[in-house]
Amino acid sequence: MASAALAESVDHRFVTSGAGDARASRLGALDQVAGRRAGARLQVRRADVACLRDGHPMPRLMADPTFRYQQHATALTAPHIAPINQFVDSIRDRDGRGWAPYVASLHGGVDAQVLSILRDPGPATQDGSGSGFLAIDNDDPTAERQVVLFESAGISPRQVLPWNAYPWYFNRQPTASELAAGAEVIVELLELLPALRVVLLQGRDAEAGWKKVARRLPAPIEEGGVTVLATIHPGRQALFTPDREERARRVAHQEAAFLRAVELARR
Image (tube, rainbow, N blue to C red; front, side, top):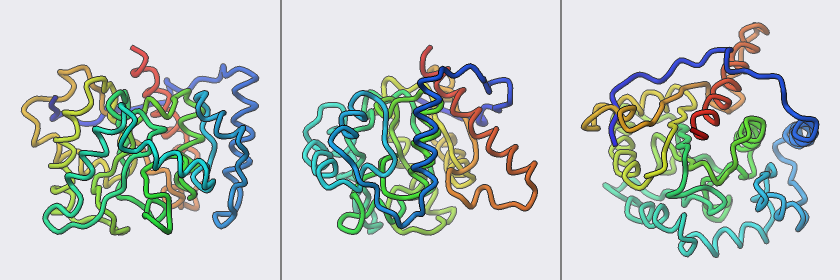
């Protein structure tokens, strides 16, 4: 697959208001959970794990040791995710860059229709102090926001492969040369995603990294039926502005991008 085009512009035409009562109720509950303080630990019941298996994620589910153990047990055995995590093994400490987290088996792996790219793995992905995984159910505010956005758009975790413009852990803004190294990895990763329909770039670093990916591909990725969308990062800093109208505009653009992603994934 290949790409050289700019990310598709998302506008408010894709914002819809016809969500059903049941989904609205679920989203209200998700928003209440997502509004908790970052230091609070979510108490997860066995029913919550079953809820995720039915396609409805729960914020901060990785805080539950039982669920986290399940993800570790299947990381290299579940057919859909094992090839992705074998690839992660192959890039760990590449060129001395250090450790990279696995992708949790709750996600789509090689079956993913949406490749969701952020900047770099955060502290909640660390092995030991965190989950050891890239996952929208990690125990941090950015992941919480991802759960709300994907659920509100009707995108299941099994449709999504989370990734980063710089896939190795260092928790800072990557340089141009580091984004170039990350771009080389993404080019390899794309070969593992035959069902891909959407690349969702979240934040400026993801966009900058993708431009480097596009220059390395033999042909535009759009020629293979893949659409590239770009929006703001799901972290709180993306909304740091005293202008309420601007903040609302950013949120609307973000939500529209997710709605557009699910529309494209269903084609």
